[in-house]
Image 1: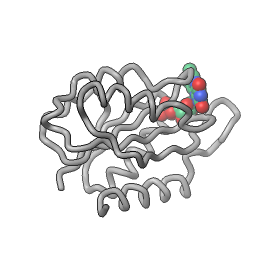
Image 2: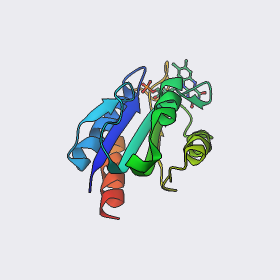
Image 3: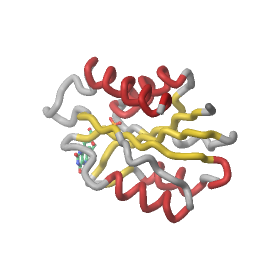
Image 4: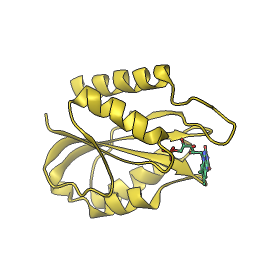
Amino acid sequence: MKIAVRYYSRGGATEKVAKAIAREAGERAETTDRELDKKVDLLFIGSGIYKGHIDSHVKDFVESLDASKVGKVVFFSTAMLGGGKSDEEIGKLLSEKGIPMDTRTFHCHGKFLFFHRGHPDKKDLLDAEIFARKIIRK
Ligand SMILES: Cc1cc2nc3c(=O)[nH]c(=O)nc-3n(C[C@H](O)[C@H](O)[C@H](O)COP(=O)(O)O)c2cc1C
């Protein structure tokens, strides 16, 4: 199975989760600034949540995707509160492109100001790995 991992992270929290998922997938985590240049069965996309939304870099990346090159997207995020409506937000963009999105998503806390210091922590990253393993093995 061909897998790619893309993320956008302003502060580093989502990057940590992306790297944990990529480790499990045996791939490198790359930022959404890197175009998807190969055909993949599974594309993990991650974003921090800012003012209730996924980052515009992630939106641009989704916009740049060629539907014939992506089997399915799996979304993950880090946030102070939780995923919020980010699943729906990216799901809508993907559906407009005709790209399927797995209903299973991964969300964990990322530190913000004085909140959730130390997150994502070891357990969060282990949970992310377990999540990726389940998705990859179906
Ligand atoms: C400008 C800004 C706006 C944010 N807005 C939200 C928000 O609306 N909801 C939320 O749950 N977290 C919010 N956060 C917290 C981030 O989602 C959290 O810190 C996340 O882990 C950031 O990911 P990153 O370190 O990969 O950039 C915000 C953080 C920043 C810097």
